[in-house]
Length: 256
Ligand code: MN
Image 1: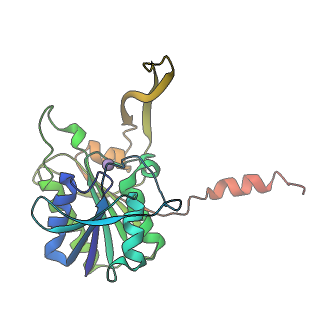
Image 2: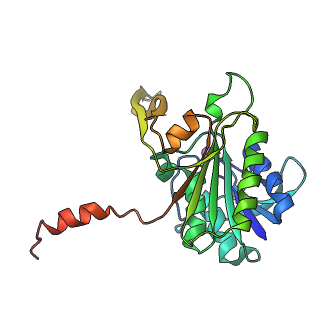
Image 3: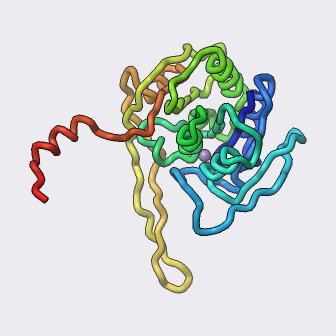
């Protein structure tokens, strides 16, 4: 089993190290991750410039590839033959949850989607560490343990082609987690606000600011599972078609 580990937070992020270490007992691990933070970059394919890859070292002394491309580029390159055949791509562990509409913004999740496009299973792991006590470093230990359990299970079972697993882990000890729930995407509530400022030359510039997003706490959803202390496992697919809307649109009777 050859496991490719990537993330969207950059190759030196502690969540990547924790995930790589959790995968090592399960197979051969290759790490290829971006050289900087690409969080909320969505699904990217770099076509207008070359992609450079260099070898670097993780904090535990193991070797890793680092690229100046996006997270999805860091998956595409290895799957296109930069390294030997990959059997599974895991992405994360992202320091914040990726639930509801987050999945289209998330570099963590879109890296796993890139794998599925190439016919390789992809699993994204995110930790709701925004719920930790203020001014404490995030502890990825419990989430890494959960990632190990899920990948081990994945290796014993079989998953249909085209399925991306989006895993969100509550910020709890493994003992206090309630269990694992299979969920659907919930509803995120974004509280973005335009922050307009003026540069030293008098020109306006903008930040997308505002408060942390919340979510609609509904049973059966990723939002609800995390709120109740469960690990949320959402099977995603890249077919975003709204099938009900197809029937509505057909009734519009377009004339060419
Ligand atoms: Mn991130």
